[in-house]
Image (cartoon, rainbow, N blue to C red; front, side, top):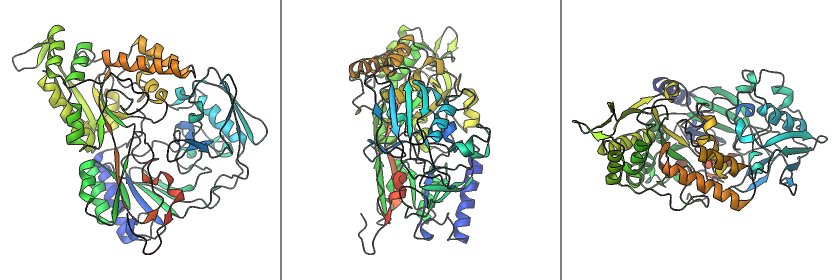
Length: 538
């Protein structure tokens, strides 16, 4: 899991939300004007904000960053298409060399021309160990990147890495700006300049990000001239602000989205995702790190009940990071709800019920805390349901809410109701989640999972472009994870968005864990057009 999260106390966020609403009411022409603002303005409510806006530190690595572009981009069907490159890369027969020809006439928003040197600078800086980029391992295959003139870039790999082209949707930073600053702390991290369709006008942490259309954008100036992302962590507050007209659209959990079904002025969008909810079972916790406890929890949890009751059908059971409808899913790794089986696993491992029904082994009570993010109703509901299922098997889980500042220092020994997920190649999810060497590296491998068979398979999967070998590797990972779970995967969640039905062009892609920052029906907001007068709402 990456740290795409809100920092700060829930009360401060709520205060920021109310302040933004007040500003909208007193100044309807501002970028926070919601549906009462200008016809060329859109305000959407999202649940999380980035920690940085610098591509050098991980922002825009999956595309759709609004401020920046990558060499390539994903279309509505998640197929690669050219962006800053004029075509898909030319790949050598051995799969080790990728050559890109760049688009001519592109400038950054400050008017400086974009060239190959900016691409080289971006990738070399990311790979520099002095750069605090938590996603550096995603580019482990990259040996070198070189410019050939101003319009050609050549990447050379250490080994054939099949999904490398998908990594080049990564946002490109301007060397002439970013290279003059400290890469980790400079002004560029909060006041970026890019080639994308929008220019950042302001970022009030915990409150909003404001954008204005880039008149120099190589794809043509967007019709939506002002675009605001209101950061509202609390699900109920987002729904309230949408209903009040302060927002034009918002991501909402299923139960709150259902409240807008009778509103003929709004449309609900459902996006399929790779977004999962999982419980980290930290290796360094005497109970959660016990293999028998982990296996028992995997059986005790009623995933389908979570889908039916918490998600109201907007999702599916999760047995690992790969959704069951993905061609990469290992058939046969589904785990049925089996409370009797869970009890048998615990009995055979010496975890015996105590006087209060909670199991004990060697004087250790089968109990541990489970943290979830404050204000996140879906995580709270998953955590409570998981704890309830666990207690039926004799495991006492205490749920606690907190901000990431509270949770992160406890991740080594305390369980967390976490989220993650990235469409595309299985390497994208599984390597960062399960590789033992990444345990304790920020939000990578939060459970500090350590399995030699999985480690070898992860390396095998990313070091070949042979489809059969890759499938075998990721099949091994998933089957081993079923035998030795370091996480209890619960559900894969469909993302629901409710929006005013005023524009032609909104659509959805298959989405990552990201909660509406680079996703949502506004992933392509730069291509929207206002509906013609009298055009029917859908």
